[in-house]
Image (tube, rainbow, N blue to C red; front, side):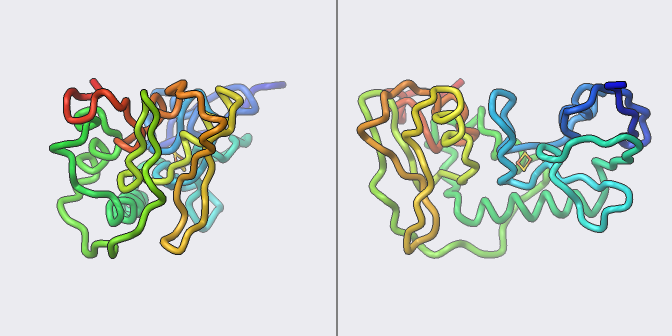
Length: 212
Ligand code: FES
């Protein structure tokens, strides 16, 4: 028997083994918010937007990294989950500049969409100014370090899709930051494709056109 029976938001779901709660929910037409998840990448589990409650577990789990089990009962929407997702977004926004009017990604930015969805109108504090490793750019791509939300999609895409591994996370005095191996980077643009915000963009579009 390769099938599993579970309930998601009180809906009976029968699905194949070996998939995550997020995938089972999606197959059943139930959408769970995500930010670091990307269908072409292995689950990363860095943003915690996809938290769900599982009966019998005291703390919510991330739907993108948790495999389904037979008899599981999952809740994807509750006041507690809304608050947790809102808090996770606020933590990201503490470090993310509100430069949407001049960001090429505005209008096609997942963080912008989620900020609207979770009704965030202000945040209580702003992070102190940080020093960034100098912004990386080639003829075709440009990294905007202050906009990076460290979701790690680009790091995974460079490794898993392009098999190059030119991107990594470096611990600096100002916290973790994205670092580039300039000798390995071939400007393929895979990082631009998967970046959910305006952290990696086409260089030629800067201040000239929107990503969409
Ligand atoms: Fe699951 Fe980011 S989408 S942790």
